[in-house]
Length: 101
Image (cartoon, rainbow, N blue to C red):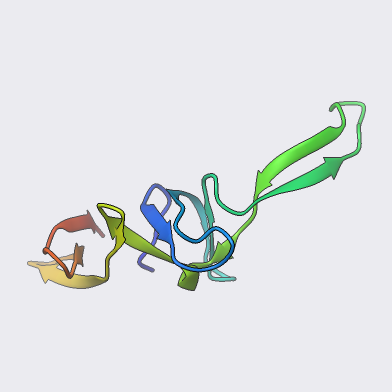
């Protein structure tokens, strides 16, 4: 998978198009990611003996196909390159390393 938590991404489509943020978590089974500050929805929580009730803002998952890595605010394609025995994710535009696997 090309995305990991902590990667900076740009939202390419949907109601939050053009927003950027860091990935908080990746849901591999459903191919979705949760991005900080993107796709924020309000949920109404009932009070418990442990918690106070109220309206909470929560980031909901968005599909992996709607996000991409970015350089200077522009979406960038990536590819896997082998350096010796290690696999490295590299931007196609300038060859800059994103991270090692």
